Structure formats: C-alpha cells, structure tokens
Image 1 (cartoon, helix red, strand yellow):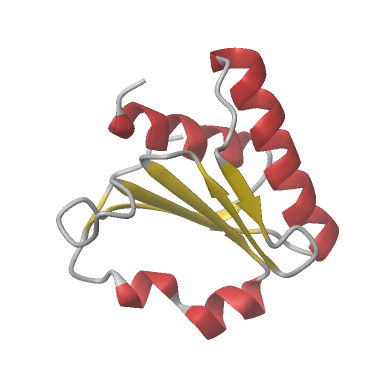
Image 2: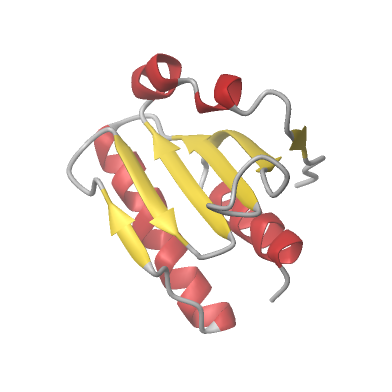
Length: 114
C-alpha cells in the first residue's frame, strides 16, 4: 500500500472508532522517520488503548498489515509504527502538552474526508 493510501486508511479507521481531532501530516520533506504522521486523541485511557488495538486489528483483517512496533501501551500517548506512517494516539492533555502538530507546522496537512 502506498504511504498516502496507508495514512488515509489509518485515519479513516480511527474515525470509525470515534477518534477525536484526527490530523494527517505529510512529513517526508522534513524527516527520514516517515512519510506521514497520523495524530488523534481519545477521550480516556481506555479509549486511547481501544483505538490502537482496534486499529491494529482492522489493519491486519482488512489489509494484512501489522505495525513494526508499538510504544507506550500503558500511558496517555501510544505510538504505532507502520513504516512510512507513524500513528500517535493521545489523551487530550498529553496531546496539548507535546503538541506534535506545532513541531511539524511547516509540513502539509492532508484534507481528510470521512
């Protein structure tokens, strides 16, 4: 799957699972870490955990794709590494504190339509 399609697919699944304030950022020009970041929030720690678990399940079921790694399963910020797409799922207060979108404000944000 191409990076753009992967980012849009991930964002759509997070939206289906009631992720909040989903943003996809094209980072390929700014970093070698990934081509896209997908950032979203959950309403509570259980919701953040459920969003990431459901995303993993749906990506495996629909596209046979698993993350290369997952970090932070017990905190208010969980990172899933899908290679060309890094997914950040936050509690609102953690997202505000780290404000990843500000760090990548020069990067293009995708128009997401759900």
